[in-house]
Length: 218
Image (cartoon, rainbow, N blue to C red; front, side, top):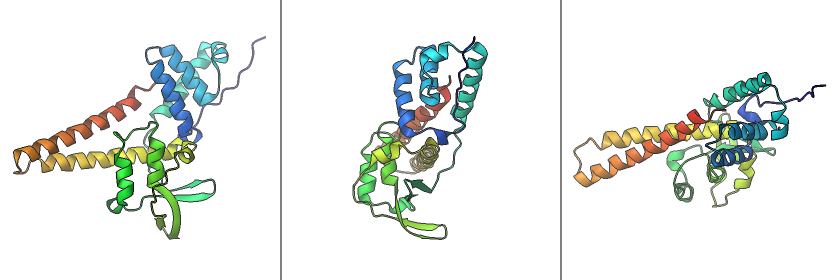
């Protein structure tokens, strides 16, 4: 008698935490040249099914899971969520990035890249802080005091993280365009070189992050 296996494939990124996502990325990186292993780890982390159970599936079932997971992975166009709930506490995204606290700015920029890696939860802890006042759609958040609770954001769902991540990507793109356009002005040669290098570095960062999502298919 054939054994029946029930596989629950996540319907959206709401069903995947950052912690689970990072665990998956680590295994995918360690087995980047083994397509079958990548599929096994993806199903294991996102669906909770171990290798023995996967190997018992029919090809039809396996292909169906692949299609469902690829639909999930390619769904990246998520909006930033300005207000989120964590354990019953409302957290708000930094309402005015142009006036972000100097300490917060320094703590974010000490990371080499803006990427969905082990530092991302720390960046989220800086950008999202408890709401202390709210009137209509306007709100203010707690003053940044240097405390970073990255553990708190590891269990926040990926729809929140991806929305913020791609907001940052778009922000960097706008910044890159400003830098490159500004470098075309009549400026001293050294200043032009610095601006052009900054713009190219940002472009490489954006390309690497976007390519990561394009290539991540099972």
